[in-house]
Structure formats: C-alpha cells, structure tokens
Image 1 (cartoon, rainbow, N blue to C red):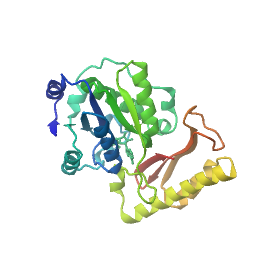
Image 2: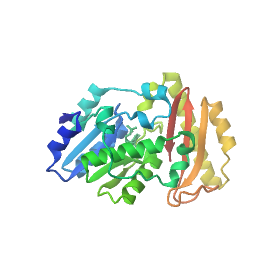
Image 3: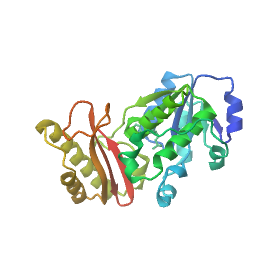
Length: 271
Ligand code: AMP
C-alpha cells in the first residue's frame, strides 16, 4: 500500500488509472469500514481509502477534537485488506483549491440531522466533492448507516453529472445490534450498557409499530430513551426510503431513523 499526504503526488501516481474505487473515512477504522473496504477491493482493481477528520462538518469543536484517532492501527488494517492507496491529506491539501462543481444540497438535507447540525451536510457534500475532484474515482462506497449523507452525495453527483457510481453498503452490527461506530470508543463500559438498552428499546419499538400497526409517538419513545440513560434525543422518525416522506404508521420501504446522545457522544442509525 502506498501512502500519500499530498494531492499533487497522489494525482501524479494515479493519472493513468481510470478505474479507482474510493472509500472515504474519518479513520478509527472498525468492522463497518472494513466491510466497505472489502467490498471495494473485491469489486475493483484499485482501492483508495482516505482518512480525514473534516472539521467543516463538525458543528461542535469539542466533538471534532475528541474524535477517536488510531492511525497506526488503521494503516495495519488497510495493509491487511490489500488496499492500494491510502490518502491522508492535511486540511490545506483539501481546502486550498477552488472546486469545479457547485455544491448541490437536496432539500432532504433540511430533515433529520439537518435540523440539528447546522452546516453539517454542506460540509459533508463539499468535502466528498473535493475528494472526488482530486481522485476522479469510478466508484465511491458509502454506508447506509449514514443514509442521509449517502442520499445527499448521490444527488450532488447526479446534479453535477459526475462520472462516479455510488455503491451503497449495508450496516454492520455487533451481536447486540449496535452498529459499529468510531464514537463507540468514547463510551465507558457502563455507558455502553446504556447504549445496548437504548438500541434494544428502539428495535422493540419498531417491531411493535409494525406488528400492531400503531401510530408513531415521538414523546412516548423519547421518554423511554431518556429513562434508559440517553442524555438527549434529537429525533426518532419513520422515513419511507423511496418517497422520503414521514408516515405515521410503519409501512413498506420504511426505516426507523434516530439520533440521541449518551453523555456528549451523539449516535445515529436507522433500521
Ligand atoms: P466515517 O468514518 O464514520 O465517516 O464512515 C465512513 C463510511 O463508513 C461511511 O460511508 C459510513 O456510512 C460507513 N460506516 C460507518 N459505520 C458503519 C457500519 N457500522 N456499517 C457499515 N458502514 C459503516
């Protein structure tokens, strides 16, 4: 695996390659990342993984600085998975050029996390666009755990006629149904227990919504999560993945979307 920290050097290396697959990450790699990377390596000749904790998508400075880092371990994982290139740029390497494409933010960016994290999705789409302009990948691999991010990147790519195919990847969970997340590293053991309890409550709630065909009641579920140890609940919503509407009753093509805090650590997922 070749490591690059500078886009000019990277571009010089890949200038004659037109079939690169790209997996963007913020590092602290876990089994979720690894499944995206494995899929990419399987489907492509060359896989480029980026590690960049993008300050512009954090609405909270403390959260940005507390973001877990494990570069040595990450590098070993990427070597083992037979990744071709690792790109770990500096802030200025990503932001010191003017982009060709205009950032397109679909109105879905105003929903769910968009209501609570000001400028977050602009930051996400902008940074992914910058990586795409530098790398010009044939494919980009993104996880359904961050469904809103995946959807918005897809819409931006379509709107700008960018020749990069979005490959959506399933969410990888542990035995307790917790989606792997870099932020898990910020929880103590007893806080992790709270997380298990909260996810179990949400999963049971979803099953009940389906089985009994009852209407979603945000205040009811919010209070249950707060009693189980969530510090704050931003939203729990049913979303139809095709229409992006918010039905009151859980129907076909729907997932339960949620965001909550345990101490100052924010978790999102959908299932
Ligand atoms: P991040 O490093 O959190 O920015 O995530 C990088 C990519 O990995 C994104 O496309 C995420 O959606 C994806 N991802 C994060 N967690 C998981 C998971 N548990 N299972 C599958 N994909 C994931």
